[in-house]
Length: 98
Image 1 (tube, rainbow, N blue to C red):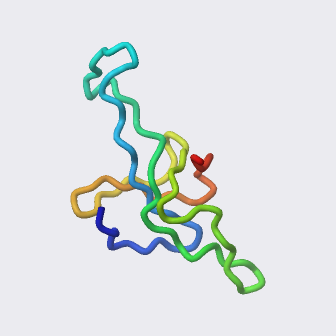
Image 2: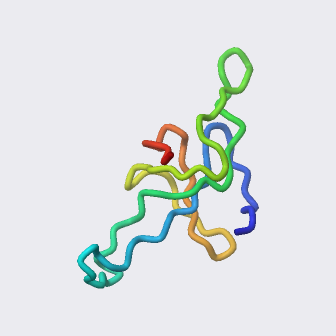
């Protein structure tokens, strides 16, 4: 995947959601209306960190390439070069998949 033409600000990250499963574990094919919004994705861009009162930047605990889990309704959905992306604050990320 090509690097997106986005540079998030402060403590924001750009995440490319992982596609939702199209079949259940039992083999049932799900229609589009029954698929849940993905809550997992890969980080494709990170901001420089939140500006602290001291004037320095805080460091983010995630980096490009990390797979993360985020809240179902967190962030903003955008489209870049025909691909769905999501812009989240670092605080919207619930966990990093190891």
